[in-house]
Length: 178
Ligand code: AR6
Image: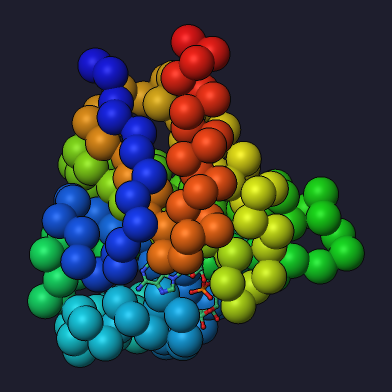
């Protein structure tokens, strides 16, 4: 099956897919940016399940992912992943960002999701360069889709126009290359 990969400019809390991904932090207890928006719009059930996961396993390590209900959101699940903070150890940060995308995809598939929407993980408060993050996001998704065939749709939900333009350009380039 061919998976549709697309970029849209939108608020991820409005997207109707099986699973939306949250750019969370290690505590899983919410924060600013897309994390704050998801918890605000999704309601208390999401936070309650995050607290239960934190109590059980002490939070979510960087590059890993956990899954909860999507509460009041139109999606079915929220997959909370923790992206890396951009710092001098760029090789490590790049590897961890790829892990965040890969582990989110794995968790989506394990839970039967056929469609998934990603925000631009780590490119806000965590300061990851947007172009580099987009290259990692797209290449990690494509690598995953070359071996796992369950997903019908992967959406990159860009909030700011800078990210949206980057994704549009990179995805158009992929099409030309086919
Ligand atoms: N829908 C889609 N994307 C959004 C939305 C939204 N409603 N709001 C912001 N973005 P950030 P990070 C974009 O800062 O860099 C939190 O406090 C935003 O424009 O949300 O991974 C967590 O708790 C940017 O492109 O996440 C962590 O402590 C992208 O989402 C920390 O921030 C990611 O920006 C995580 O930092």
